[in-house]
Image 1: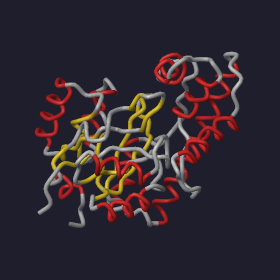
Image 2: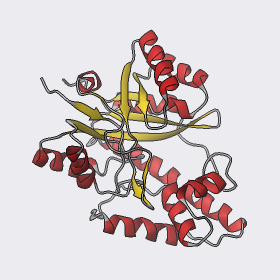
Image 3: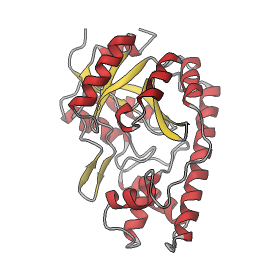
Amino acid sequence: MAVGQADLHNHTTASDGTMSPAAVVARAKAAGLAAIAITDHDTMAGVEAAIAEGKKLGILVVPGVELSTVADGRDIHILGYYPDWHNEQWQERLAGLRTTRGKRNEMIVARLAELGIPVTMQEVEQIAAEQQALAGGSKSKGKTIGRPHIAELLIRKGAVATMTEAFDRYLAEGGSAYVNPPRLHPFEAIEWIREAGGTSVIAHPGLYGRDDLVELLIHKGVQGIEVYHSDHGPAEEKRYTELATKYGLIMTGGSDFHGERQGHVFHGEIGSRTVDISVLDQLNKKL
């Protein structure tokens, strides 16, 4: 039986991370982890390269994804582990989510222009391409562009000084350029993951401020809760441990690593939040 710790929430240049899938796996190995999950937003484009690097380095790579959904006007993220990422229907569904994400980006850019900040989607795409090139990433299809890329552009334009300021002033909920168009409902995301043979987990529930929605998702069949997260403190860990125990759910954890921007690691360093590798046996239905 494998022993060690697993960080089950990490992003790469396949979405809005700053490090290539191979580099993220290497960083996990250097941190002494036994396993790491790649959970990019609405895409699994980085999984294959990560698995290949994991085999070279002797670290287990868990195929995953983080689906962007909305319930009651609130962004909710659902993690999916071990879905059949070669399944055609699954890939078509992920492509649809990326189309919606692209429209959201365009709406944000338009809102920024209305606020007197001249940015274009071409410039945002250039930021993403530059970061991909710096990370040594491939140009394969299926990658996503997100708000961190827009935030980087705002810094370059001199509109803000830091990533935190970009989100606080413009891009996060309550920000002046924040938009939240109709998107996939988390009930559907849970079903999609199930149909793809995967296991669904509520990502960072402490960020939502809506435990009523968390319990609703539990009653609708979600299989796990991300108890340990970089933005969870002891109170959140205790609350969600109790909730998971009450309903017999899988308890997961991860750093939500996105790489470094301006010398700061977002959200947390790889390995800063982990669970025992035995949790993988619960997540992988094929074992």
